[in-house]
Image (cartoon, rainbow, N blue to C red; front, side):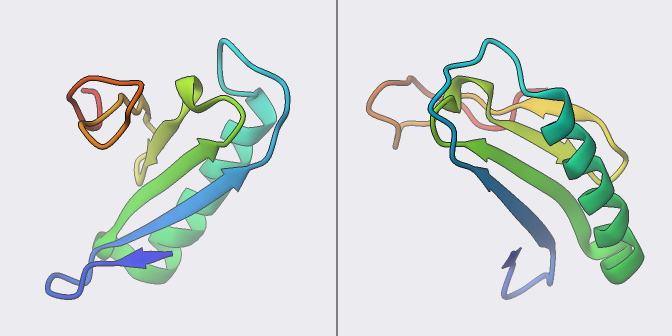
Length: 90
């Protein structure tokens, strides 16, 4: 869990260790993130922003599941040596 020190905003992280490269997020992973998102809203209300899905063996399918259940792909940032510039895709 990450919490912003000034605003109190909350994000959950769901890290997956997988050796299989994927072209899309696993359906079961997304279902789990949706359940976590519902729990986050229940616990933190408007302060909850969503869940970062981070499959270590397939970062190309990293996603952000919002508090409303929308699934957004995460794109590389300047910190990613294999990526370009970016952030949460909209």
